[in-house]
Length: 185
Ligand SMILES: NC(=O)c1ccc[n+]([C@@H]2O[C@H](COP(=O)([O-])OP(=O)(O)OC[C@H]3O[C@@H](n4cnc5c(N)ncnc54)[C@H](OP(=O)(O)O)[C@@H]3O)[C@@H](O)[C@H]2O)c1
Image 1 (cartoon, rainbow, N blue to C red):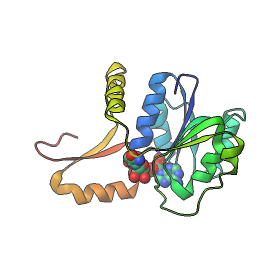
Image 2 (image 1 turned 45 degrees about the horizontal axis):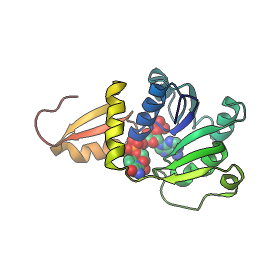
Image 3 (image 1 turned 90 degrees about the vertical axis):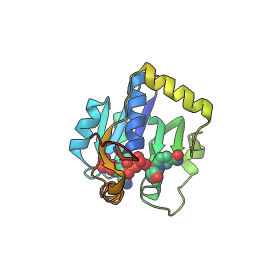
Image 4 (image 1 turned 120 degrees about the vertical axis):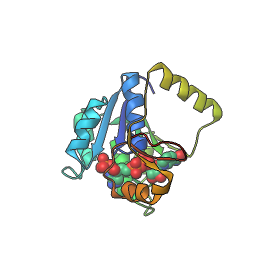
């Protein structure tokens, strides 16, 4: 992905915000969809260039197309699963890439792949990268002074509360559980 890319990320959780930070560091365009205007404002401060509230605009794929003059996104981090993947497929540009990472809305009906074929798009599954990828990522993080967005840090004994908070979806970025030592918020 280079500076001419348009990245679309879904929501403002840990994966989405890291994607946004990478896109911003590259100088690429970043589209963020979120259920919250307040979170969108925070995403803008991190470098998001197009903000779409998917509660107010459930047909956010149409908004993505409008915002990109009908081109669509060149890279999409697909995090939602059945609640999002058909709209992702309708948001991808010709020759674009959909990176299948998460299934936040659960497992369910298969996407309609006809448009993937029509657009010569790729769907890339990601579980984990190689050690080489990890080293390259860390070099990039250092070079661009990128720090993860951590919403809250819990002590190990508070792990159930951390999961409850995660499930609430009210966080912005990552939730951390400290395995030992002092807790620093
Ligand atoms: N493949 C891998 O290697 C890998 C690695 C890490 C995570 N994952 C998976 O990737 C997904 C994201 O992980 P995460 O840690 O970033 O999760 P997370 O922090 O829990 O993300 C939650 C956020 O996702 C957004 N969201 C939920 N439903 C949505 C929908 N229908 N449309 C758009 N956005 C929606 C919401 O953002 P707003 O509040 O802004 O609306 C919510 O706050 C999970 O399924 C996780 O299991 C996979």
